[in-house]
Length: 275
Image (tube, rainbow, N blue to C red):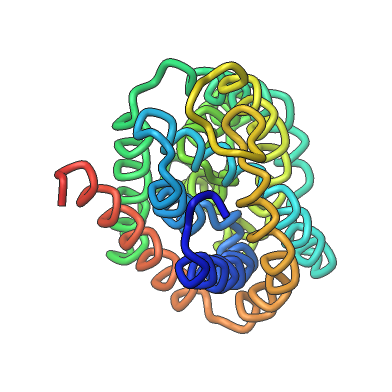
């Protein structure tokens, strides 16, 4: 299948199934869609089946956003049942987040591969340093109102679309910068994944619609093969991550989230340096 030996294909399928399970847990624990796990795994899959370098990273990012759709919905519903989601924040961010996500996804048509990796390194690295170092950075006593709040939403959408994530890293960071509790930030960020993943996936389909060199079962920069291998298992394991998140203390959750982001940052920095 796709020119891959049966043994290699079996390893890929089992590996992707394991990554799908981990993605679901991460979505529940950290309020993220798991894109930081999905993107590098898909990148290697597409390398093995011979996808051209120029299309490999945007295809991984677009497919990640499509996979995050069901994962984010499952995670958001589980957090909402616990009453820790701030719906007023989601309502304020809804329109600018969707507009920013579409802008970032369509920019993928022209952005060089390094752009995606640089955004990953900067955003994940800053957030990791703040959380692990227990740095009490504050931009205000509460989230702003009006134009600045909408700017936050738009920027979150753009960066999330370029990273292939559900926005949990960025929105969690913004909420904690404005004195919101980590558990509320994580829970609300799960809802951001729903706002970002759907328009993001559609935008990547459009951005890569007529691009050459894409693998079979792809629509633009979204591979339905990757979607089929990841999504079902990640949906099943997301509620397990939610239970774990609410069982952890505030500081433990911050350290765990920081370590997770540090690993993401280090992985893409190494790739940028050619290691």
